[in-house]
Length: 116
Image (cartoon, rainbow, N blue to C red; front, side, top):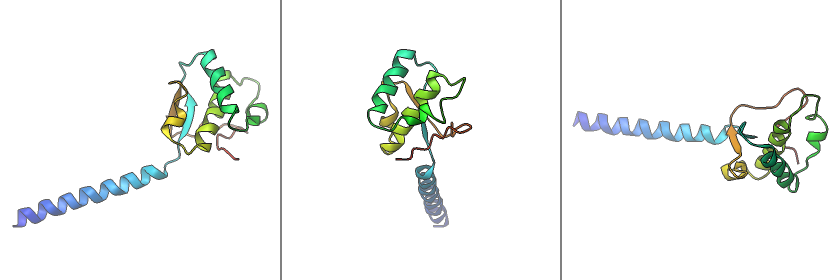
């Protein structure tokens, strides 16, 4: 009987820890960036597509500094699209050229946090 109680208690702890873990994962901030292996044609297509759906002025203001690259600009806009559309993994696909990360890619005056 004691063994059964111990097993039941262990299963209860495991299920509670799983619920807690899933709850924390749901609150984790994620970002969509371009895969480093993406070609220029794919990056330009991603910018064009996303700019049809979000405000793209960020790549012309705080994010477009000397040294800014096409992949930087595409990543900012891809992330804006991703965040505007609910941070769903399918909103970061971009024909397999998007990558979800938990590391905030913002730098200097270039914020990856979408503001409508």
